[in-house]
Amino acid sequence: MSYRVLITAPARAKILEQGRYIAVDRQAPLNAARWLERVFDAADTLADFPRRCALAPENDFRDYEIRRLLVGDYFLLFTIVEEDQTVWVIGFRHGSRLPRANELPHEPPSPGE
Image: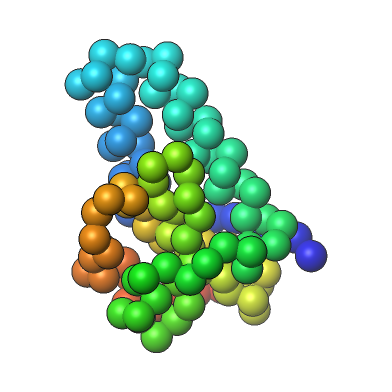
């Protein structure tokens, strides 16, 4: 079974913010481009067997299921909406950061959004 993978605007903004940090602050634009490609490619792998990923600690703070995919030192946080066979990437954080429930939506994205 193949799922559609979508990234919410807040999650995309956090990913791009980290890419900008690598490109500008670390003065490594080529590394930033490679890193961004790696993150988005990893997100695309969620189309097949997204439940292979463990539940995220953030799962304890919400009424819907939140899983995580490790990409280097970062986690892509996502939920699966079975009604429309969609995986929504809803968050992104460095692995050393504590989970912050206030950075995630209170409800999963609606089918068809």
